[in-house]
Length: 497
Length: 118
Image 1 (cartoon, chains in turn orange, brown):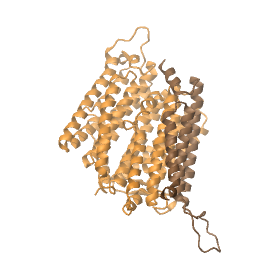
Image 2 (cartoon, helix red, strand yellow):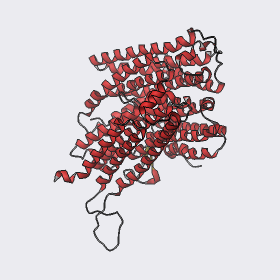
Image 3 (cartoon, rainbow over the protein chains, first blue to last red):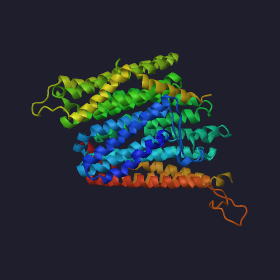
Image 4 (tube, each protein chain N blue to C red):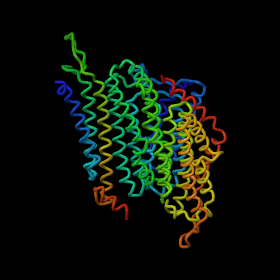
């Protein structure tokens, strides 16, 4: 029997990428769904195997075609990529499993195989961005996942998705091209595209000005992809009008992969080489993070559409992740990486609950769910669990990351206290906007003209509850994400001078 | 002389700005895509320029001639990939514009926003 262990990083990308075209050949839509879901769960199994290996202290480096590293293409998996792979593959698997019923409403049967094929391409692209150790490969995978996700978002029946996705396409391409310019400038100065090699060779560069410009281009490009405030303009439209299952998948992981790359570039490549870069990084990103947290939560307070409300809350959560990172300390980075994981759990559960109620209530406006909790108790109790985790109630996953974030902020004296105040105020705002949903669903009367909605389909409901229970599980036993985040933040700070 | 020596880089910067301006300022979706295309093409120029060695040829080893000067082929290979990405982006973008035209009967951003408000 061959030992698959060393090949896992490559299989992580190749499996969904090969399955994507094959799925088109399956003409039946149900068969295509089964095949896509199985593929996604296989990728999840690979991610779990990789994580176990990383936790055992194994190093994964894979040379494509056995060409030695700086010349050939290298794939790499460490603790940071392992936690990202877990988030991506589990989000994709759960979203696909629950997608069956909600996609039947959104997309005609004969188009579904094409849709699942695009889904697997997004999965392959996101996994590829995470495992690649080569700057240009990251660009190619980024474009694979972006192009396929434009298709997913515009695949539904809502015509408003089209202008939203056009906007996303323009912004996404601008972001990717900025990234490409940055990579070009670095290649010009160092002659390499391998990230580890890049870091070594920048030491020998005498004129650092082009590298500084490159750092600017890469930061802005990736911030566009990650919807960092004020570059978030494309996000609410894209999340709101996408088919519900797609929103679950993309909201849980797509912006986070861009943030992951941002941290990777800044801490592995630039921080060790540009003097004072850590201070610039903090001064540039911290105000943006604080603004994102406050403005994102503020807009969410007044939003009438549930999906748009949660999209603005996502912008605020991206702010939390960035805030942790901008502290440039071990505790701050740990908090930020734990929040990658916990926010994916909370938002995944919330958007799954939204797709349950969208099927039955006929819309995602707040007035559509008036009094719906009486006939859909399971859906709304899952939504409440997800909401509590988003707020950061003790006993849910969200509490863990808020706890780490606040204790990291308090290490920084006066500024830390101000930041803690920001975090607490925005958590209060989260209480208010989640309460608005709860109030409508539990305490308002349903208009008599409309029939009371039924409980959601069993499969979708059980997936939603799985996500909700995971929020509680990782709130009570946070060892796995915390251990991975700690070793990831150690890795990131390893090269710091 | 310095200015002339950097001629290609100036062209790159100017094209980049023309493209970016069109993407941001134009309200017609097709014009936006044209801007995006110019924007991407300028980056192709940046890559090709940095790989060029004066008097260099394609890196093919020929018997007989002892000393040969080659241009760096790697940026060209990278840009070949980036061109493919650019074409896919453009065709997907145009496809979306066709769908928008079908649904909204317009490709002007203002009119689409107006239709969405109703």
